[in-house]
Length: 134
Image (cartoon, rainbow, N blue to C red; front, side):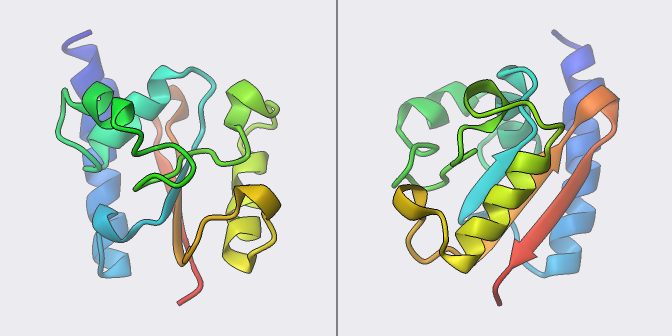
């Protein structure tokens, strides 16, 4: 997919992550859960690499370690996301982030959840929100 992968995803992700993490004064290592607009499953791979959760080219290995599973290092789309919950144009991801931060997620609740990042990278435009209890 080169150069499209780099030009369309990784470059904008890097630019957005620099702004976000500099504003928040922390980086991906402090994110407790990630909610990713997943109209296609590949968006999860692109976001993991582009935002620095794992090195470029290593998202597959990162995922197979169980890191993104409930109870993993970085639970992703804990309500199921677009692919398993519903396609609500990203709203369900934001609602899930609030539920997690408030401790209202029931069986999906992440222990010690303080920082959640939401990423939407539709049509080459990256939006990201950091929600935090701190």
